[in-house]
Length: 126
Ligand SMILES: [Ca+2]
Ligand SMILES: [Ca+2]
Image (cartoon, rainbow, N blue to C red):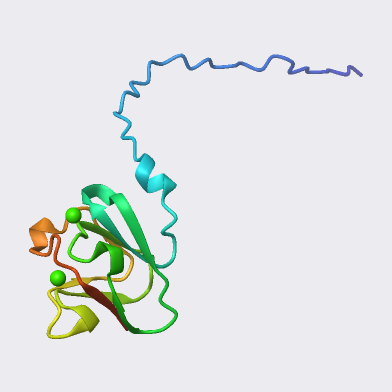
């Protein structure tokens, strides 16, 4: 009787030395990464979330005046689950001129006709 032992010692390693053309441009978004605006709502003095940042900590629906960024806000972040209405007047008087959808951002309010106008914001349910 003959015992046959088959040893499979050689594992063929396929060396993939293909040239992967990874040359995608890397956009530096330092301002975004450094932002503390994670769960509330933030206004920014300039476009692209730059300049003075003002964070609004809404604990319930309601109106808050823009404060130091009165008539200065040029971009916004709304990571919250609420809708944010923008008013040209203080105390959310009159009708709102712009609405931020829940979990939305806008790097430039100019194309919404609301650059440097915001005087108060109100959070409402979506
Ligand atoms: Ca501005
Ligand atoms: Ca205003």
